[in-house]
Figure 1 (cartoon, rainbow, N blue to C red):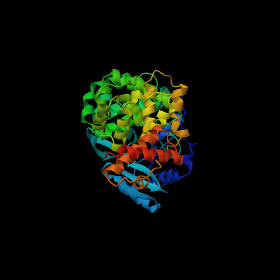
Figure 2 (figure 1 turned 60 degrees about the vertical axis):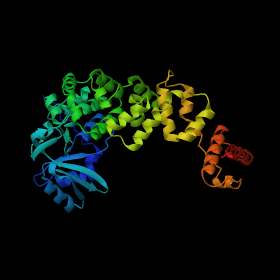
Figure 3 (figure 1 turned 135 degrees about the horizontal axis):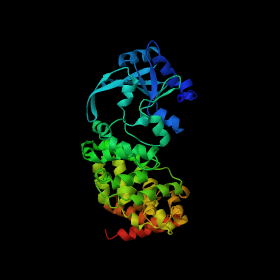
Length: 416
């Protein structure tokens, strides 16, 4: 007796809304459209769905025609690969015509359009990503994806080595998907193929590696996945240095203890930035943004000097760094300290910015000009001296204290 088909017929997004309208427009007059990939996978797992991708037998020109006739906005974002982005009520849906690989060479494949759902599924990366569901909710599985989902096993479709050779980024995707959806050890055949093909990582653009790595760092089971990568000789080539696996695992724990959202840059700093040179290396190796690079530089700078207990010193640091950089450095110091993730003193330090807002330095140039300091270098020196004294005095606000600080600062720079 055959098993009943797996169905998502009760999924609200198949019954009504923009996606249902799109499927209805594309699934008529001899054509068929289905939701494919991650949305089906996550729906079966009961996890959040962030975007919907649609595959169709209709050719790109027909997709454009139907979308326009229905009042949608079609945008040819990847026409050479059969991809049209259809915008419905400001929501984009990526619609791709079924394809068959004619020749593959790395990321760039020569394809032709087809009508065979199984052939389209077999050209994808992992079995759990090759599921599709039509308007009736029936889930179509041509490669054993449902069984692998139930087993929480991330497995390549067909020959793992061949799948990886089509795009070496799939090495990193293998570990990212395992960290997100897998349980236990990674699939042995997939892991062996990743190790064999590891030299292919050098062929990838740094931007693509950055994107995939940052996603991996945020996955629920990133720590054990990174440990396997390190043991397999796959993590050092990505980072260009020795990873701090314990620091990374502790960062995830202190994030949870501090009640802050997991942050990929904080986790990257915990994994690979111990000194300023590490921040520079990661910046170059991963083509990080300037903002990401700046955060790593601040994290790596003297994190070992931070310890809880002196709140006045902590307020001074928060004032100088700002909330984001302060949080980055404190969480990194906590993750690398001997303290547990439930240490009260560290928790209080990490939460300082929630209970204390750094004030604006109240003294202005006019306060020194009226004391006889002329505009120019002397005025700048007086302001700097006064701000340093104000911080050291724990940010007084009363006029008498501020006047005393201004007078002392002017006296200090008089020889200039």
